[in-house]
Length: 343
Image 1 (spheres, rainbow, N blue to C red):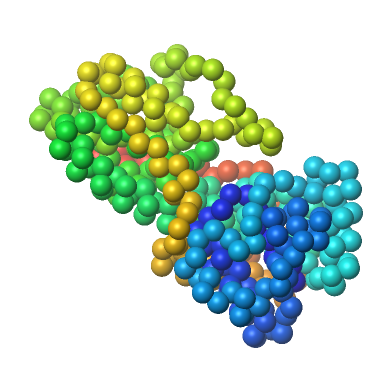
Image 2: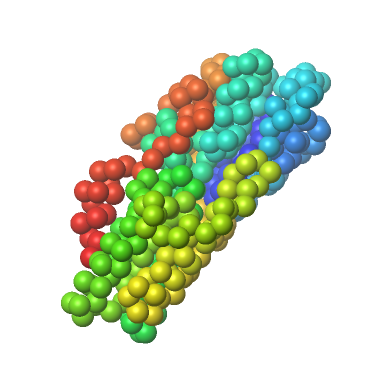
């Protein structure tokens, strides 16, 4: 069996690999090979052996021992054939793809259109993959953001400041909503709900009038203003995959709040610190369960599927259910819970 990690790094990746290797080698008698740098490693046949011994100590380790990047064999005229050749020459039954929306979409296309035997494991700190209730890495990212918000409360209160905390979330506001609730934010701004900066300022002013001079505004990096309510500025840069390079909405919102209210306002960009470091205990357990379920699904012949958490159970669902889609934040959580605590 081959294993690769694709897309952005995420706390818990090594725990998934470790679990695949542990059950595959010790229980099922499998030989496991890791591909370096995602699909590039498959096409170029760059590998490392994955054994119980080589994965010792990896459970609490962030990042991925295999390395990761974006990209697809479908971007190369001979990419699919190179993948087939690697699978054949190494004698693999198939490949376990541990990745987010993009990686799982690529895996689904390779399986459906080209018959490549793949099985998916959903990973993203954004928690926006359709078909699973949770993805590993999300709990860790929320905890990191919440810890930061807790610390920012004290400095905001010391200086009577508004702190605007920008967290990750390109298309969904899961991190912003959960961290905002857990951290006692005054306002949370998410991609699913375009915001009116005047309403944000009104809430902060109303809070200020009640004698609460310190406030926390949590904004997801993909949050957008209501059309016409805020100067948009220049179009964002895009990477070589056509994705907008996000980051900076926190500075824009902070500048507008300061200008419109006169309150001392400071932006804080958490950025990639949310991806790094040790996964929480919850994410270690979820990653381990996903890894064990993945190798079991391989032996069950569930190619073209991915493992998923549904309620308290780990199940397999078709990759087609997740491919090309993004799961928005739970509206009930945002409107019925989070907004109750907005000033």
